[in-house]
Image (cartoon, rainbow, N blue to C red; front, side, top):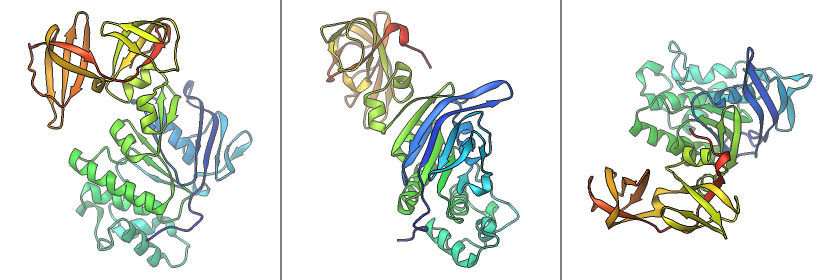
Length: 351
């Protein structure tokens, strides 16, 4: 197995980080703890501050409050500032940012000036990313996926303590993106380096990361493993953002939520009484023939189908492997899940 130096991984700790552009504050009290060798995704909509947070870690954007530690070393904070080139941080940008006039080997060697055995190090990381035979090629002769592999090799060559990825797959077409991100995840787990990756794509965050930090309006809303975010979102906003969600009105009493679908059992966390918004995932619902709702649209995916059903004043999404209904059919929507999450009505925000 090819790997980097044994110390080429570090913890990352952010405490109460604020950052601004001019008079506009972009980050608000951002706190994170990333373990050595962990892969964490910053997930959120455009403009939520995730790239600013990444650039603050790299030292490319100043923080106005709070502190950042890499491997226990303070790199940004009150009366402390370490320049980007001295933070032992590698970065892969959205478009790879390769030098078009340099061949692959020279691109990878760019950050190794002054070191010994540069050729051997270049050969090692190119082999790591399955590009060992491409050292003589110019970036313009490579596919998008190959260019991102070279960009990854260049970032790994100086043996950084933390690797930062800024939407590294967004410029690739859908089919190539799936293959490249799978390969990159394998490579990074093989290396064992600490990784923070920015993305607005939920599938990408869930596939790539050990944990995901969901950002909204410059704040970190929730941090957890993908299944934790999906099954136990901290708010209706998070629930909507990390997956398909039906949020319906209900009234809570005695551990049950009374809704248009009947009395639904609640998760233990959340309000115990009063008006609330109830999260029902599409896979927690099932359709049967009958009167009560009308199928308005069907999205067929092969392995399952997503139905949009109007029931009174509500639209419900139902995901099922059964494909026997068509637009215009009369159906009954039945709850077949276990428990649901709930939030008091006055705490709900929308995307």
